[in-house]
Image 1 (tube, one colour):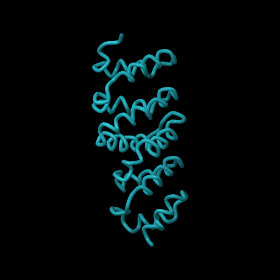
Image 2 (tube, rainbow, N blue to C red):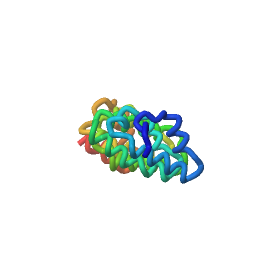
Image 3 (tube, one colour):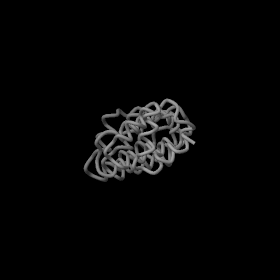
Image 4 (cartoon, rainbow, N blue to C red):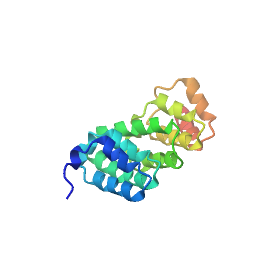
Length: 173
């Protein structure tokens, strides 16, 4: 029986989860699965680490962890959605950006309307099409484009991503 997992230090978990050996990462994932939901809410850096892990097996566990957190603490879900948009704007290992967009769509969709308009614009300026598409998903979730200047809405109307153009058209009609 593993004891003390609730208070296991982040550096130890990170060390396990970032190992080059799948069996060591699996041990780290098993430890994370034993951490209570209320403790996970207090450890957003651990949860975000799962989401952006270069190891696909570690990333795969993040959806379930996000579900657990969002069910217990919607405020934490909102915060993690914003942190994930931060991560989308930075360089990541192969497959991470696609995974983060999937998490936004499937696990954090109820929090997307809270992402500020200026964050969406920053994402639309990204050179990565997957990040631009995520911005389109976020814009679609917003009831209005309030907070955007008219010039920004006009730029949306000419964007390469279809969902972005559609949102701009909805706003102007």
